[in-house]
Image (cartoon, rainbow, N blue to C red; front, side, top):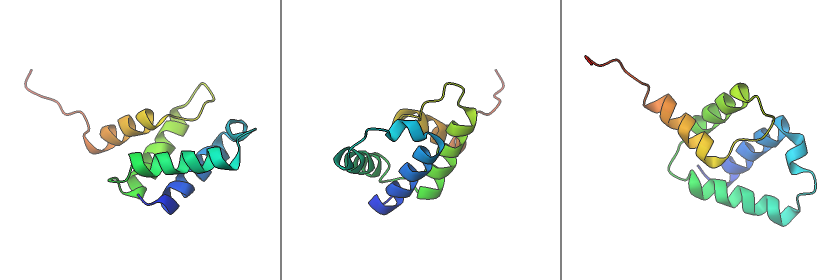
Length: 86
């Protein structure tokens, strides 16, 4: 995921959680975009977007998901549980 793609992911997140950006400075927003771009650099943006959407739809607390929550959702999407003989 590129920095520009990360910016779109952050826009989506904050559209769903507008109070999360209240009081955030431009520098803080830039740092957030840079961090998400670095953390998800190896992930396709479509996968990150799908995982974010899943986190938003499953949210019951009203807070934006952390990068770890989004990564867990990516793992759920890419490595679904399968039944074993046990």
